[in-house]
Image 1 (tube, rainbow, N blue to C red):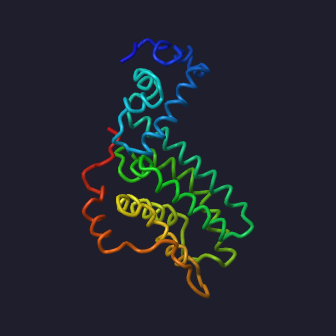
Image 2: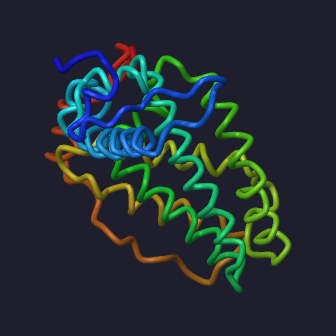
Image 3: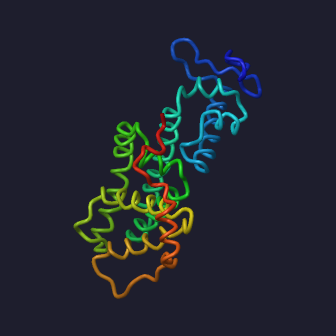
Length: 241
């Protein structure tokens, strides 16, 4: 491990102590923080929360002491990443409100959010398995509810979305898709696209036909493999402790 003296820990010897009175981090310290977050994003996306802070430090090219000074444990690092992801998703929902067609705005957002969730093991585990979830739940609700609610209201006002749907149904469906991706990741990680299509068809109050499913169903052998190798276990997998 590198020296615990800040300023000798990063690859460039940059210090990153906060100034007296809680002043903002020096520029080089903030660059270190962003480097750590980027590395954690890459590591957790690939390996999930089984990755360690040592893994993050190696990926970032900084000493592990620098990581611990910015983020004292994996839970605090997961919190920072979670906020970034939620902010990104909320921004996407706001952008989707600009779509000329309200249905296309809602459906496009659901597709983009599902692509984020199903491609990022770390985010799935943070949302579905992490032990420290209460603060995250509140933050996600307050950031996402207004933007997603607006998408739902626009589509309902246009008669394109069943009137009994609530904005809180959208994240539940996204969790379902994320769980599907996790369940089948060893055989067909893209199978969630089939179920998103089915869900979207079910959300329409009426339709002349049905949307062709973009991917085939799991074969009996694939289903058996998924059941045998599924990482979805009730054993606390993915804890940020």
